[in-house]
Length: 358
Image 1 (cartoon, rainbow, N blue to C red):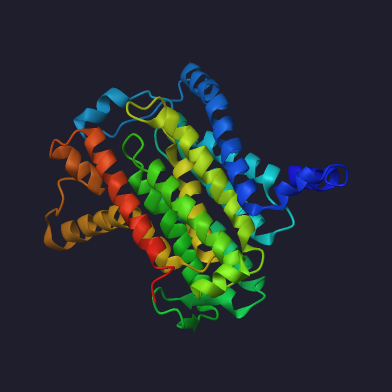
Image 2: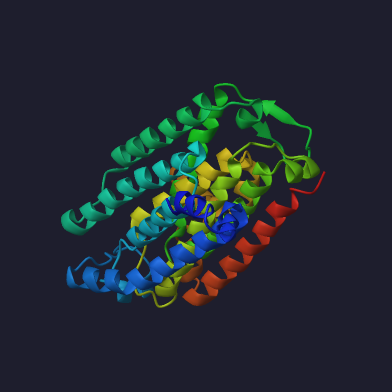
């Protein structure tokens, strides 16, 4: 919205041309989302506390979580609003890529909101079957839209890191891959969101890295130099990534240990789906899985635990997801969180290094 205004004002003062630069608008978008989250955060915490919108704790969870009962949850609403408002203010609203990501964020955010709301008022969220059905509906819709609106082959090819000349045409298989990435990443972030600040900081890191990749993919000279696919207009997705970074840091201000509020499914599902969608749009799904390795491992730990128990009758971990395993080994929560952050940072660096490796 404001981009249109600045373009109009450029006729009167050339200084407004700075808003044409994606890098500048990405920074401004991050700052805008951060400011919104910091200002609105205390209001959300106070209102949720007054309305008894507090976290419910599993009876079979770590005993250290008992003290968290009643902490305001559904703070993900703050994240979603900050991202969407900032993106609409500074993004190019004629970009299909922007609207695809915003649509996915709102769709998965709504699913998470319904699940959180039902947990608070009914004691139990949406059933796994229906939750997966709605996630699949939104994810599949986004995948089909990306496939049907693709204008160049690169938008539907699988790019293999390191082997820059390898691009596998996926055809209709693109829809299946995109669907798996969106729904899979959404649930992966949700699994990871179990400790104060654990999920949001890796999300910020991966979001920032995806923003850089989106900018490079959308810039023909950088794309040619790095031998990565060039997709016109993809740079605008960096604006959304900036919003994710700003909103995430603003939320972390209140979510850091001991948390003043939790994001709930409304935030975790929306953020994970956003990362998955952006990873597909910029054609770096494999790189995303590497950078988001923390999310992948947390999800894998749940799958391994279930399979092992059903087939062998015993558990591999004391408790899944993986961060709960370390809790039961009596690691202090801040130690688990910071060590996971460090690992996430290193994985992001590994993923980014693959842009240059041949």
